[in-house]
Image (cartoon, rainbow, N blue to C red; front, side, top):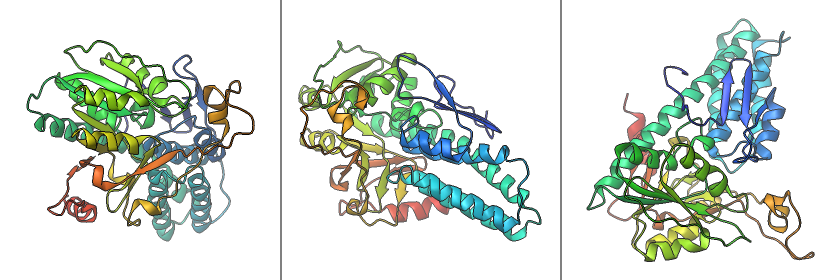
Length: 397
């Protein structure tokens, strides 16, 4: 229980109590469950960079708490309240550099900087500033879980309403957006969980995206709850993580390769596609794990609604469009070697590699953006007015 919100009991990527932080090493899943002790912001930076923890919401929480743990274990801080605020600000800037595409991290850092600056303006002791930071970071942990459950509620209701038969819904998702990518419950996977809890999900399909393996695992569709998992990139985030979560929670699911998604849609086995987001521009253009764009194009061709599920913290109103989003490139080894770059070489020596971590899906092919405050839909011109939506919900107490 954090700030009155019960955390997800099934799977947790983040284990925290004041002065202690452990992150589930997601590189080792599903065969090993290993938690790493995070002692300070340097450990947090490395964990994010090396993808021990991943998923935009989880990255923001893990980074914030890594500094909270460092502060809790500082002992005595020699300096003024302003010195303490500068200390926190510099550490947050360092943490943001670990994953620049994920806007949740920079958004959390900005909010936490405001907290310490406000505290420094009135504090007589440096420790008061550091304490204010720790408490604010802990609030973010609890808020993330509540936010994800609200996203699940709005998303499940939306998908139910848009289907003639509100039962027997089959949803396709990409990569991992569940408890392992957040503080708990998940965003896109949270919607799938909510549909399952209502007893209306037929199957969840999870797409696996891999540049070398083209094997497809597809089970007979059961008239229960279900998801289709599309394998995500050469890190196998769909097969390793999303499939792991769904099996753990007894949600009927099917694993497919990225190349099978269009055929599955053509076969009439997908009612909706729902993905997460690392950053959403003001016009609705969305950066997400590589392969999302092609999935959206296929959904549009087959007349299937394509939804983005993300908290408002994933929206970056400072960017007018997706063209301004910085896309990270991952190591060439992830394509040249097996096991996400850790195994034996599988590609010819000397071949050049282009390995973007994300792509940008244009707002034109997105049906709606599901947030913790409701669903952002398009206006009469076919465009998203995200700024007006954000201002409207901000005015609601």
